[in-house]
Amino acid sequence: MKIADITPSTRRFSVTFKVLNVGDEKQITSRRDGSEHRVADVLVGDETGVALLTAWDNEIDEFRNMVGETVSLVNGYVSLYQGKLRLGLGRFGSIKPSETKIEEVNEGNNISEKEFEESYAPRRRGRGRRFY
Image 1: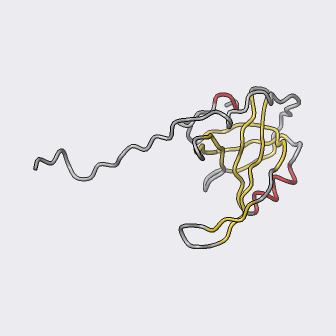
Image 2: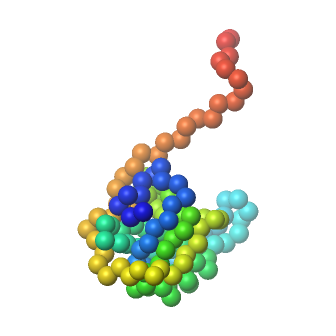
Image 3: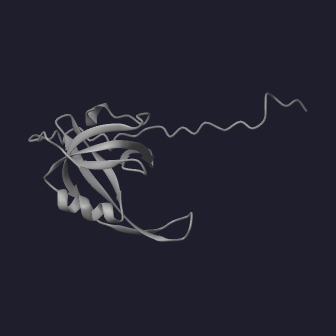
């Protein structure tokens, strides 16, 4: 898969990209358990475009060591943050060295700058309609 082909509905994908840079870290507190975490955006790209990948905790340090390298994201996921597309490793994703090298990156097509509609389908409980 190529960066430009990724959409909000893309699931469990693999993509090869060049790590371009790691943004500033932010400290956040988990809503789930109150623990502290580090988070940073990583700009990645290939010949079709660039995207932001959200890196957490130790992933940030790993990506800092990979700036300028070509790597493959296996079993990645897509999320929307404030209506904008983000790539992520998630629980099942991993980063592996790539045998192919990406020399030219199309920075003119940033898929993380496009606005997407965040759709939340309401979950239905019970069976069928209720009549009052």
